[in-house]
Image 1 (cartoon, rainbow, N blue to C red):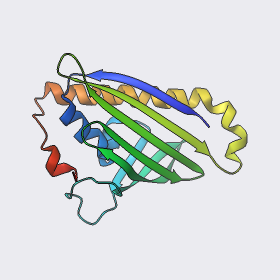
Image 2: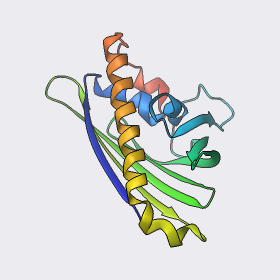
Image 3: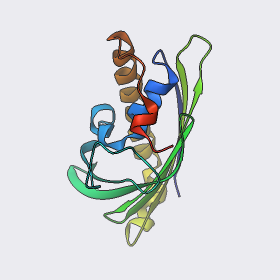
Image 4: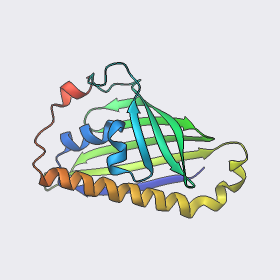
Length: 164
């Protein structure tokens, strides 16, 4: 099972960084491997909470394949865990946030990916592909968060966006 681990620093304060990244509806804006994302819960303005679900269109080998993710752990503003499944792939993404010395945020992103069916046979050969996807995602995350910091995104109302 590939385990991807990336870290980054951003100028965006922790509350804002957490609010933006933990809401996977924003994934297409920072992860070039995600074509689409839609929150599946009835009221998309309701706070993100354990159990919140998303349908993502994930780019795999030139195609866009559906995956469904669900928030399985939420510790505002320090940690979110999402579990996803679809198209012969399961994933557990754990994203940790901590304050950086400059008032920004340190992000630690770990993704455990498991391929099913016949794809398990080629899993050992895909390490480089998975590492490239992770590098692209973390690069997009850093650029998007820094852009939001530069635009004066302002402090997010975390209590309103997440069920505490």
